[in-house]
Amino acid sequence: MLAALDLEGLRAEWRRRWDQAPPQLRTRELLALALAYRIQTRQHGDLPGSMKRRIAELGRRFADDRDFRPTPGPDLKTGSSLIKEWRGVRHEVRVTSDGFSYRGERFGSLSEVAQHITGTKWNGRLFFGLTERRR
Image 1 (cartoon, helix red, strand yellow):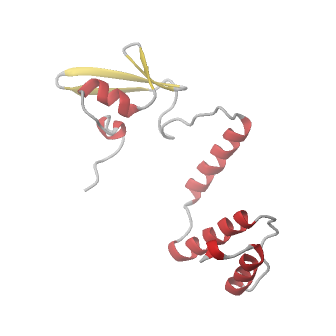
Image 2 (tube, helix red, strand yellow; image 1 turned 90 degrees about the vertical axis):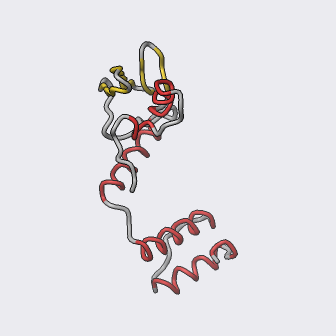
């Protein structure tokens, strides 16, 4: 429905739905995104505050450094070690600023490390016990 509306149509739809003036956005695309987001939050609820803060922080980091690559998760800090015993062998992975280090090799994701260790595809967070298997 929104895809078929031009800028004035989107503004009219905003007024119809919320009985107030739409934001002063100058492009059709931005207003369509704002309208779609507002419709979705009314239907399904908004993001939790912690997620909004994380998104805002990532936005600031990307704005400051276009080459910024986020760490795999907020719970993995650079310098941390992940230890996994698998088939009787102890495996230690270090979290680096640009990925992971395992036995002197650099990996871009935990899944790559898990595949290197096991020889099969794994969800790295699941393999290292950072995520529980869904039931």
